[in-house]
Image (tube, rainbow, N blue to C red):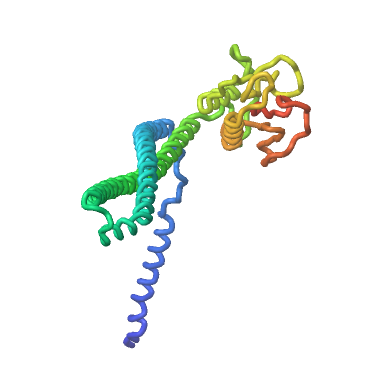
Length: 333
């Protein structure tokens, strides 16, 4: 009987190992779990995040309040230091003028006095009086010089104090501005979380919206009511909100699907602060349009439509209100 060659026996384990490795790779590929998208945050989770942000905001507002107090204190200190500096400057200037006048007088009279003292032209009594007067002038000059030195030192101290207070004030202003921005950023996060707790009713799986009928005493749809309430809560709108009106002008107002968020009354042009409020409302509506079912926004003679995107200029309708300069208009599906 022939003896089997050793070569096949050596290769066989290699083939087994190769098959085992291949099966391991195949099994790994089969049982590897699919990568799933992050689940949508639940209302409970958002409420928890909102509570944490509210707590952080309250702490920042408290810090901002204390920062304002420190800023006001620094302002008062700077004012006091500047007043002291002004007073010291006035005394300094007056004393410097007197000192210069005394120096000029001494220079003008000093020569003749010395000649008289050296030549002995005057009698003994006159000489004694002259010496006494000279001694008195020397003492007076010394006192004046000492007083001037004190005034000079107080002036320099007041200047250093004023400069120091001004540096403190600058630091206080910078710190206060940083706290304000941080508080505002946190408050915006809170507002965004509040918005995310709400979604427009009647949304289909494909992202479109089911038509709604107006209801309630305000004669607007539930979708429009949600948008109105969110804007009113977030932005205030002190000049009123007009939604339903019976006049059929071809728009969404008679259908209960539009609201005007007024920035002034009586057709007056709004203040700069109210113009900014209107811009913020319009930007918020664009940002949340697809989630809340907002169809288009009109503000300052421009229109933004969710299907077209971007702002387009509208034709001139002949007035502040007609051209939507005193209010943003929002229509929903």
